[in-house]
Amino acid sequence: MGVLWFGGNIYTMEKEGTAIEAVYTEEGIIKDVGTYEKLYHTYVASIEQVENLQGKTMLPGLVDSHLHIIGHGEKLLRLDLSQMKSATEVVEALSNRTANLSEGEWLIGEGWNENQWQDASIIHKEVLDKISPHNPMMLSRVCRHAILANTKAMELAGVTEESPDPQGGIIVRDDAGETTGYFLDTAQELIKNAMPSVSQDYLEQVINIATDDLMSKGLVGGHSEDLNYYGGFHKTFGAFKNAIDGKARKFKAHLLVHHEVMSDMVDEGLGYLEGTEYVELGAVKIFSDGALGGRTAWLTEEYADEKGNYGVAIHNEETLEHIVKEARRHGLPIAVHAIGDQAVDAITGIIKKHPLSNGARDRIIHGQILNEHSLKMLKELPVVVDIQPSFVSSDFPWVLDRIGDKRLGLYYAWKTLLDEGVKCAGGSDAPIEEVSPLLGIEAAVTRKSQIDNQVYRPEERLSVFEAVTLYTSGSAYVINQEETRGKIAPGFSADFTVLEEDIFQVQPETIHEINVAMTVIDGNIVYKNAPSPL
Image (tube, rainbow, N blue to C red; front, side, top):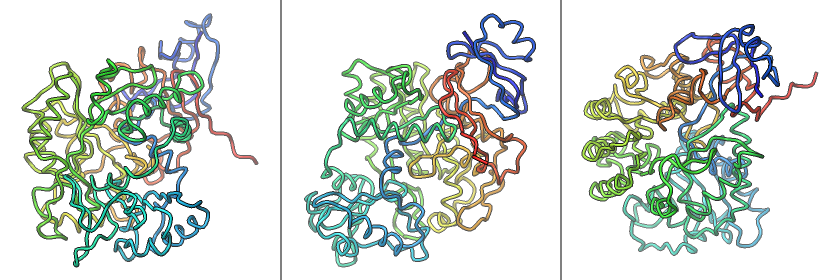
């Protein structure tokens, strides 16, 4: 038995402006599209339910191509520092939270961002020690490529003044050579490895909290990277399968597999796109550099505001190539975090040397800073660039201090990539950015900074249609599912995002204000916005 959907603006996203009057779905699949009259008379014997959209706008289900589902859930549970505008505000919040901690309990905060503060200096461990001398503290920076830790956390981790920097990481020290409590990239793991493990029940609870929120934002699925953390592959994969069981909960989770747990997946006899109907395994995730906020993104030219610093290579190129060769040995695509142009150059060179032959697609995650050689390689290779449009609104203008004017042209160059024929998908990198796909779409279209309301690189603005495709056909293409997801057409999954207003008709600056009316996965309404009481 099926459902007939009609009565709104139904955009197929096959071509710009293409709209239809009605959709008929059966058993989670779009069976037919056309006029209401035609579909009603053709399928009247099978129609079990009729859904009148009442003038709302239906799109193919939006999918976030890069986020951290468990991290997003934890942000909803933990102390959220992401909206705080000063170090003083952060310190006050930490002090308030410390008062309610039991002895030995970790204080964990998420999302601090010194670039939002009038004084952009990093909080020193001495300040944290005054707040919490006996409870260990770990505070993740918004980029998740840096943390702050107090002395108690460092003691539990065995970090001393003599501890060396790990490969791909930095234990930040002051001019006197003493540790400051600031840890960059792989050095974060020194602290995180000292934290108590979490239970599978906890993980399932967090996944439920996260996916409830994601569906309320209009998302039918997300490509997440969680499997190397929270107790490892087996516990985390099991938590996802239990939480998203396809009965009590439907959500299309595509899980990237960190290279350190690739062998666990292989030992389970699992491969690319295998798993369950709602929890499938994806490409091998590799980090090749850090982030611009902490000046650890790997660049071909030194940072404009820190002479002699070119960023951090998480792996040397020999190790990076070895990881790729191991993935290829099992026929697996790779998904490589590469923000700086040197990182992109390094990984595209390795991809060219070790191509896939089975049609699966590699992806470059972020690709914010490019050069002419990077762009040339991206055009030549069957690689998708997984972009996060919201970075435009949150990184400017401070990112200009990092990279200087010499790199003008190929940074955050989303329009250039599309015009050059490079396939792109769109995500949020939540919990680093707000998870709403409408915020990402608006950022891609307006390129307006949330910090100073200025428009940066207006020539790189996307049309609304181009921006929406990042989260529909783009997110489907990167996982080889462009023939079954991301459009409203016969044979495609019955995944829909229904908005209260027409996203193609409102002012671009108000896209983020559109309310999500309904989220539909495999023909089932999994979220419905309750009308406000009069």
